[in-house]
Image 1 (tube, rainbow, N blue to C red):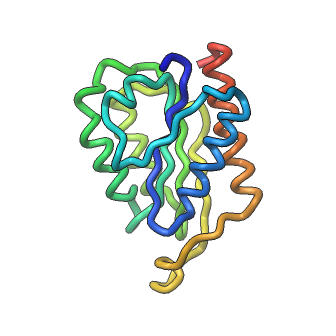
Image 2: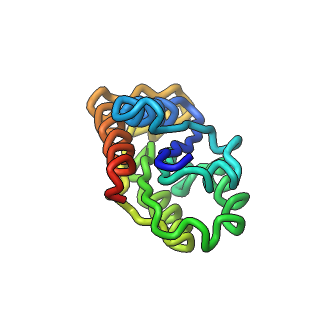
Length: 164
């Protein structure tokens, strides 16, 4: 759908799901038909090709992007190659400590698609450092949810206005 933002997410303990939902809600606040949301396991190349821009939301796992998000990129990489250059994207990473490895990994992948980054990656550090904390359901602070919502709104508005 022309002008549509696709929010692709995966989550193991709920943190990334909450951030993706906040971003999606922000995009829909900008324009009711401005966004679609899909779990990474469900997203197919046709879904990505139909979107005008992307927001990738996922947890950092072992210093890298979560496997379900990586699998989505692996499924979609070649079918999208040379077909999405210049489209805008942003990234939200829910991290236990710093998220930089996950950010680097997604940036390397989308460089091949020649996507246009519209903002630095948003990294939400939840500070989970013990096995119990890592596996526990995550509660995302309201200010982080507000930032995710604002990012979704910015992407959707930019697509609607033809800025990106």
